[in-house]
Length: 339
Image (cartoon, rainbow, N blue to C red; front, side, top):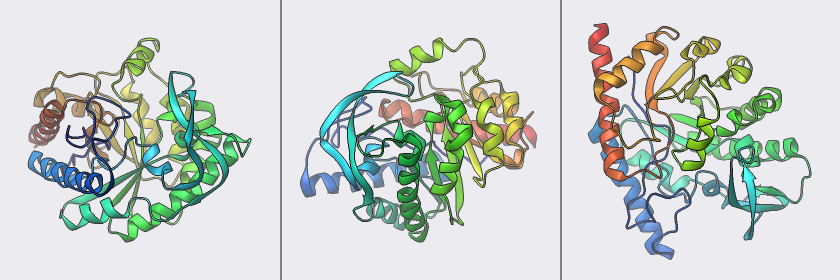
């Protein structure tokens, strides 16, 4: 019961990149950077295992940003002339690359880090990719002129890489779609369909992560505007329940999400966020177990996984490590309580 895992990203060591930033600059370049990325990946694999996580990942150590890390391997995208654009329904501004031609993969995107991770852990391995709707919301379109058409073009590329990751031995492929909580109607109308296109043909476990964003100030301010109940999930969970995606990762710790909404995902594995990534306060095992207990009112124990709310990329490394230990200890306490 209650296998433990993370949403995806982990803090980069200060010898690899700037710390506490969502779009950090690398400390070096060339082969030295490639080696540093590999070293950081192995470091976080070991730290996850030491914490006791059941499902581990590469911590996205080779990616400057969870979306840009994929886009860098795509033809048709101009990184040399980034433009400022409001993303996630203008929640905050970001410098984004431009889509200037037909989208096509230059080759494999994440073969190095996936194969490295697979060769160095015997635990279940999860690999994360940005979802097609979220990618479409993180680039400036200067070619397609149709947001949906562009998103499905990205979905085809994601599918190519996902199938290759599966062949590399990845056990779980997760697509990150924070944009679902910014464009709820669109998520229900076509976002879930684009997600399914990205996951087409996969036989490994498929997952989607839908959060309210990293613990950066813009997201914290936005959450304060959402009122006493955050019911965004309600609008697209019915479409997601009908999809072939097997797991859904949600933000539940210190959030205003009514946990009763989990009932709309009946039959899915639910990765319940029990660790708040927007706070430096480390949860106690009791707090983690309590969140699991509340979620158990709406999802069966065989379908509940314990997870972080979102990625930890901007977080202090020592705090992230402590929160991983709290996650594992809290899940163990929840098992003990049920026993």
